[in-house]
Length: 166
Image (cartoon, rainbow, N blue to C red; front, side):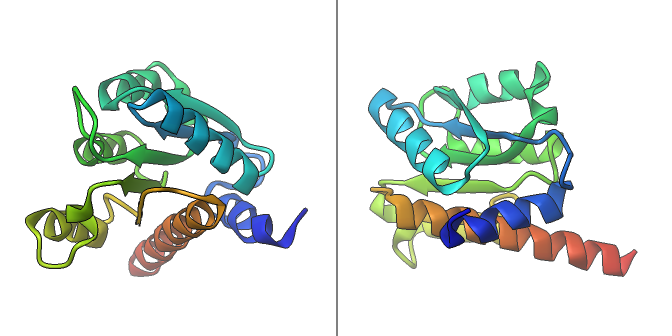
């Protein structure tokens, strides 16, 4: 296994367990071209994981409620989508799958620009553990790898911290 994939795959095993059955990455993106590109990038970064995709937050939540949630290892989502945006969807998914990391991304400058209302909202969601990492589009192999790694690391730290408090 290439070194660049080892940490992410290993962190997923530590979070969910080696034989947990959580072997699906849920990619949520409204643009068909970007959805395909993101799915391929995720497949290149997380070897051995199947990618399932949804066009928007409503569709993703329906898929999870129909049983996919028991198989999802990580969610990668756009923020700006019709019907239900990625941040609202993240809140809903965390209630359904609290230990599944959520990596959000956006082409919108407002989420990456300190001092904007959007970046403040995103920051609060990250601090609350609803969103586990953020990357600005366009995405590439390195940004997908980094975003997934941060999402996994942040969730792993949160789980460890919760366990120590108990």
